[in-house]
Image (cartoon, rainbow, N blue to C red; front, side, top):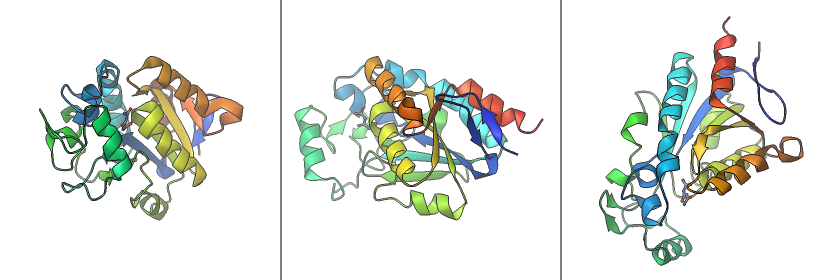
Length: 226
Ligand code: TIU
């Protein structure tokens, strides 16, 4: 039987056994002092504020036995997978990809800034997708991994709402996944960007999918067993 979650623009129905929780880029570089996000000139308090909300989602997903996927944005130490256009623009903003910082080289795999924040560290058996772009499908094996497990429903949380969450959402939607964006478990540095991004998801009858609050989704997940 499908679980039914209160959502916009209308209820989101999902089968738990065919659902994955996708936690996008909850890395020190986006959420911790001295990371890429802060060095781009942003206030990181919005991205830090969702850490406890996502921690609750992880507890619920783990308890229900859902597939959990974590993503990380970053590049190889020699930056050979970083397009020059991306590199040049990051340098213009004073946070060059690969530059040394308080948490190691910015957005480079293996550095502390690239790690997922300690509160949300993946546990044994969870999947971590390393991606060079904003979307989690581009240049990764995420699509085949989800298809091989029969996943059809994606629950999206993480940062930032209008950049990596939206890019992943759009990639997923075009591939036929049914996507729910949790609006209190996603964040952007600028509130207006977050709100616009959330609103876009559910426009035109749910052009990219659905939005809901985390509590509604967790209630639906819980209720399916009762
Ligand atoms: N993860 C993600 O959203 N990457 C970004 O670069 N986001 C910004 O908002 N800069």
